[in-house]
Structures are given as C-alpha cells and as structure tokens.
Image (cartoon, rainbow, N blue to C red):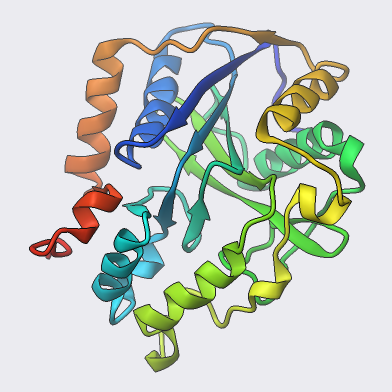
Length: 280
C-alpha cells in the first residue's frame, strides 16, 4: 500500500436526502475541501438518497435522455449528473452510499480501489464472501463491481480533488427491481439506437441483486451501517463523529460542482413539470 493511515477515520452519517440529488455529493466535495488543513483525518461518510438516478458523464450522450428522465420523474425519481466515473445507477431508501475520503492526492487509483475493497470485504463479511470484478450485463459495470453469490450488489468510482481523494460506492441492501428500472431507463433513453459511444454495451437486470435478497434474510440499511462499523473497527481505527461541514466549504463545493463542472440536478417534481427541459 502506497499510503498509511496516521489517525482514526471519522465515521460520519449525514442521513437520508429527499431534496436535490446533488446535495450529498456537495457534502462529499466539501469534506474533501476541508482536507486542506494540515493533519486532517480520513473520513468515511455514509448517506442515503430516496430516490434518484445518478447519471454518469457517458449517459449524457443517450439520444432520448430527456424523454427517459421526464418519465422517471413522473415515477418519483430525481436525477443528477455526477462527477465520479461510471454510468447510471438508481438510488433509493434501500441503497447505502459510502464515500471514503483521504487527505492524499497522490495515492494511485489501483491502490485506493484495493484499500476500499479490503474495507468492504471486512465490513460485509457477516453476509458472505464479497467478490470483485466486472459483472457483465449489470448497470454501471466495471472492474470494481462487487458481488455476492455471483450477483452485483454495488460498485465503486473515484474522484480526485485539489486537497483529497474520494472513492464513492453504493451497497444495495434490500430487494427492489433496480435491474428492471435500469433496463427500462436505457430502453426509453435509446441505448439500442446507438452505434458508437454507448454508456454501457448492454444491460441484463437479472445480473444485480441485494444483500437481503441474496441472503434470504431481513436486512436493513441501519443493520448494514452497524455491521460495517463494528467489523471495520476490528482492523482500522474509526471514531464515530456527528456530521458537520463548514458552511463556507458547502457553498464553495456547491458552486464548484454546479457552475464549474456543470453538473445538473433535478428533483422528481422538477422532472415531471410540463416545461422541464435538459440544459443545452
């Protein structure tokens, strides 16, 4: 490993969001900006968004994206164009999101992925053996998909900032038809009409699952949070800390993501409005 952890992780839970889907990403960005201070600790930030489509940059090329987002808005989904890599993932109240933030901008991409993979293998060991590697046919498929009993239950993506590195991941906890949602989304958005620059090659909703569905047990997001914390603390120093980010860092992060990186974000109500249009 090309880095060392010199002080405990701050374990920070910012709860459940139902407003702008950009808000939890702003919090991650603000936490990373706070790492400009010498001696800043690493952070594990947990959050839930109910419910939205978190689009990748590649999804912006879909020919009928506006049509698909408008329909999903009527179905109760917001949307956001996120800054980390990958393609679209659906989030809901049964998906736990976790961001690992390090005050280190020099760690290699592979080293960061490997470290967080180790965190997950330890943190989720009560549910079975977590495997890493692309799950072909899944939505947002990639090298650092993670699966349980052969089905994808989550994925990871990285982002570098000026003062820190962020690795964001989602864990599908309870059973919902997320694979079917994504099959429908890409059908509406015109994936099959594209010949080049497809955000994903294909999608088979049956390739994804959840911890509860695959273990045949009643498992909640709160259960997974508690088990993650308990297990991770056996291997790494972790200090649960009330969530707090300075107001000026939040304002700075909001401006950076929306005005400089041009990330759009809409609630379900906004997407369903008759006059809604995608930005040019």
